[in-house]
Structures are given as structure tokens and as C-alpha cells.
Image 1 (cartoon, helix red, strand yellow):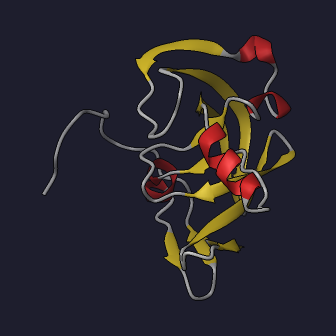
Image 2: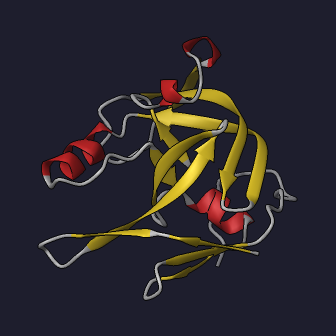
Length: 154
């Protein structure tokens, strides 16, 4: 179990976001903790900080990121993704345009984010988010035992 101290961004509207410091291929990155994102993603504009352009592949699937201006995403193999003491090897990262988030953050004087920490990794690391303490607790990564499919589970 690892406990990761989060950064809190407050907004005049009364809302807030939590940011996590992670490491991608040994380089520091800032991710927005996004329980509304089905998948952990990197920003296409920031991805080259962590992965060389030659590693990017065109993804035929349509991009479903809300607010995104691009209908395509890219895939790259991240050799090492570290979230606290959780180390994930050979993570297939999807990159999408997160410019809309970064423009809004920049306009309020907040730092830009390199990606979104989504429900895929939060679930598979059995994450617990403690809002009052601004702490994200993660267990060891457990690979999914079932093949992903479109489904509603009640």
C-alpha cells in the first residue's frame, strides 16, 4: 500500500481538483485525478516530454474524451509509470488533446497537467481517495482477469 499526497487546486466557484505527482520513464509528471475518466491518458502536447515521437502510433479508435477537439488519439508504450511506490511496466498509454483543461487551468494561474489518472488504474490498484486529507492510497496493480468488453454491470 502506498499513500500519495495530492495537490489541491481551489476555484472561486467553490469546486476543486486534485493533482498527483507521478513519474513517467524517470521524468516527473503532473496528473489530474479524474474519477470521471474511464482511462488514464496523457496530453498529446506534453507526451513528447516522456516518449519520443517515433514511438507514437495512430489509433484507429475514435477519441471519446469530452471537450477534446481531436477525433483521434495516439498510443505509446510507457516503459515505466510510477505512482507512489506502485511501478507499472510497459503501460500502453493513450494520448488525447487535453488542451481545453490546460487552457482553463492556465487562465486561472494553475499548473498545466500532463495527463489524467483515470478509473482504469484507480480500480486495478484498489485506490482509496481521502478528500479531506488530500491522500490517494493505492495497492499493488492487479491486472484485469477478464477481457474488456462493452457492458453495464449492476
